[in-house]
Picture 1 (cartoon, one colour):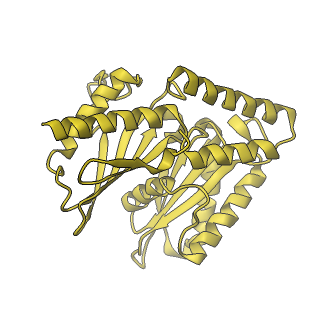
Picture 2: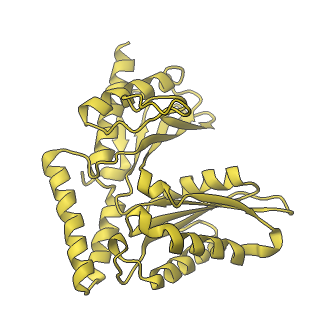
Picture 3: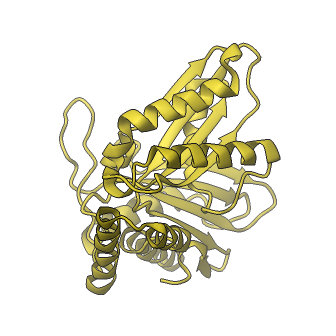
Amino acid sequence: MEAKAKLKNTLVKFISQVAIYLPDDVYARLKEMAEAEDGRIASELYGCIFDNLEKAKTLKRPICQDTGVLQFFIKAGTKFPYLDELEDVIIEATEEATQSTPLRHNVVECFSEKNTGTNVGTRAPFIEWEIIPNSDELHIDLYLAGGGCSLPGRSKVLMPLEGYEGIVKYVFDTIVEWGINACPPLVVGVGIGTCAATAALLSKKALLRPIGIPNANPKAADMERRMKEGLDKIGIGPLGLTGKQSVLSVNIEYAAHHPATLGVGLTVGCWATRRGAIDIKSDLSYTVSSHREA
């Protein structure tokens, strides 16, 4: 019980940290984008963004009032000693962090449309598992999925002859039509796979990769770069009020696909892309790799 309580307390602190502080890479990229702007409106808006971040840090309050629905992406070693209790610990930590951080109550049950008041409900928080053989360690990526950044989310299966040009067109059409609803500048996650479901999940996982780390596949990395350059030319700017750049990053994740289909998924993160990465060892010591500055 003592170990379970220690693990829960670690996750409560981690959830709060992700809600209050931007990950280091997102903060650094925002600073870079702000310094590149010379327009009055864009410069003032970036000033508001950094004032917001400073107040969140000083007051120990979430960056945004919409603290989202918590989503956990877990890489669990088969020999991690607390694997059996982990789901219960995540649920308890979510409930406690909701009160202590505090987090806005964002989980509404389907059909009854009643807010649970705890950020816990049917399959909420969302937990996605990946098992790592012969490991006794645990890696957790946490993403706070807010309403605005979730609005542009799309997935579709293309005819294979539409090719990668069809993927690019789908992404650009979606960002042009919906991007300003997601509090730009944006992190754009693109998933490629066989069906709408796999492409959508891969697009969410693409958001978890730190900014500045390209896809290991050179062709995918080139596509990321070219899509970013093209989206920047749209000039959405901070909060959609024009500027030199539109996106913080474009990240692609993919899986081998059926020859008759080409699934594409799109998930967007707002300027306040609140994600975190924590590594927990079997002795419950831990490192938060995403927030070293905080």
